[in-house]
Length: 411
Image (cartoon, rainbow, N blue to C red; front, top):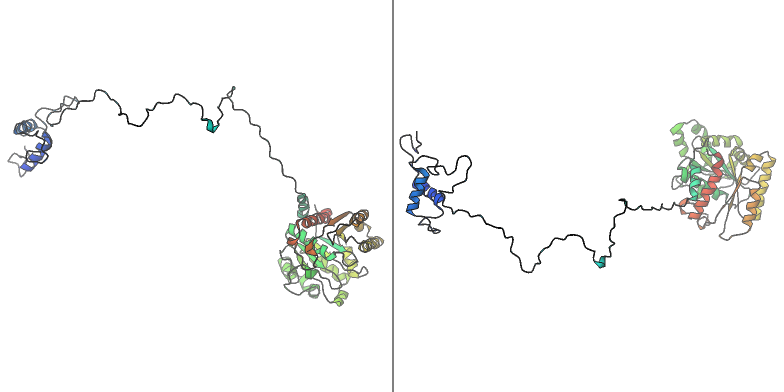
C-alpha cells in the first residue's frame, strides 16, 4: 500500500515546492534562478540525482542502492554533491608570529636573580629538616597585688569586726576605716560595712556613702526591735532603709548621730544588739571608734572586735597616745588583742621623715604587724573619699594593709 497525500488510490508525488528544496539539498546550494547559484546545478545532474534518490518512487530516498556498505562500512559519499574531503597529510603547527620569541621549555630552575638575594636550598643529608631551637617566651613578672587579692577573696569562717582605734584625734582614723572598707569591698564585691561609732559628731557618714537619706544609727536603734524580727531577704531590705551606699556599691555605711546626747543611749547592751544584727547581713564590719576610752560604747566595741587596728601618723603625740591605749588594754586583760593588733602608719604629707622608721620599729615590737600607707593628695581636702580616685601606689598599699588585717581570719 502506497502513501498518498489525499487518499489511498494515487501515488504521492512531492509538490513543486518540496521538490525544489529536496533538489537543493541533494545537489548543492542554489538554483539557476537564485542569486547565489554556484554553477553546479544542471538538468542532467538533476535527473541523475532524482534517479539515484528514488528510482520508481520507492526506497529510502537516498539512492537505489545503499550508500553504505554492509554493517557500518565506509561511506561512499554519493548523492550529496559535496566534494570529497582530502585529509591534510601533515600538521605543520601554527605559523610563527612576528615579534615573539620561540618558547623553549626550561629543563630546570636556574639561579635566582641577584636582586632577590635568595639562598639556594640544599636538602638535608639525613632526609629530615634541620631542628629548630625554640626559645620559651619570658614569663611575666608576678604581680605583688595578686597575693593580697587572694587573701581578701577567701571565704571567711564567720563575720569579723575590725575596730580602728586611737584616742587621739586627727590620726586618720576615719580615713582608715573608709579606705579599709572600700578596699575589701572592691575585692569581695559585697558584704562589707563601715560604721561610724563616734560619740562626738563623727564625719564618716559625710566622707563615705551617698546621702540618699538622713537616717543614722539613731533611727536604727529606734526601730531595732522591728528590724531584728525580720529574716532573710526581708531583713536585708529592712536594714537597707537605714544604710547609705558607696558610689560604686562595694560597701555600705551606717552613719553616726550628730546629736551628742544620743551617745547616752548607746549602752553596751544596745551596741551588742546592733553588732549582732550587722553580723547577720555583712561579712566584714569596719568600726570607727570614738576618742573616749572610758565610754561603755568604746569599751564594748573593743571587747567584741576580732581585729584591732591602731591608727597613727608620724608624730610623737599621736604615737604616744596610741602606745598609751595599748597599755590600757593590757591592763584590762586584753593582752592577746594587743599582740595580734595591726599598726597603721598614715603619711599626712609627701615629705619623708625619719620618724616613720622609728615608730615602725617601736610598734613592730608591740603589735603583730606594721603597715605604712603613703600620702595621697586626694585625701588632703577632707571631702568625700572615692576609692577609684586614689593613685595606683596608694591602692596597692591599701591592698597590702587590708590583706594583713584579714589574714588571720581567712581560711
